[in-house]
Image (cartoon, rainbow, N blue to C red):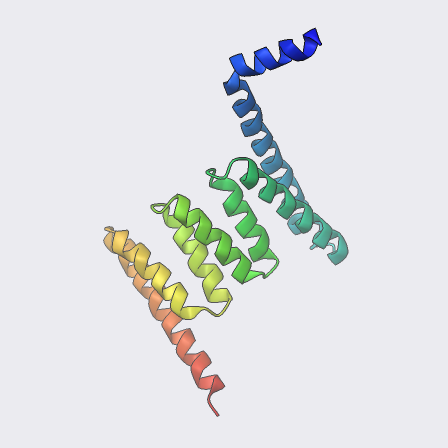
Length: 168
């Protein structure tokens, strides 16, 4: 009984210790997820071991989701989870996760680019263009603006090509 009371007093006196343990746990899940992601992409897929790759991708996905659950304001697990989906060609799921990351960090340019890429790969050309235009509105560098304009133009052209293919 004394041990239980002592533990309770310790936990009440040191609430930061519990948070620190959760943060470490989130980072551990993230590291585990990266290990599985790398195993799937760099080892299993090149060896054409698709079943093993699928297992590793699933383990990575679980680990990144757990890291997000523990520390939902940390951006990196979202980016890793989005990449996991992207590599599996689950582009709509990747876009959803990148959108969540963008909500957490609306000034991170790389998230806009990842989101637009996933949207384009999913065939959501209008959303991809809008995402790049949102990024363009924040950009001040003339070279970056030209590059974004080129990307936007290419996606619009691709969208037009797709519309023409679908016409009778």
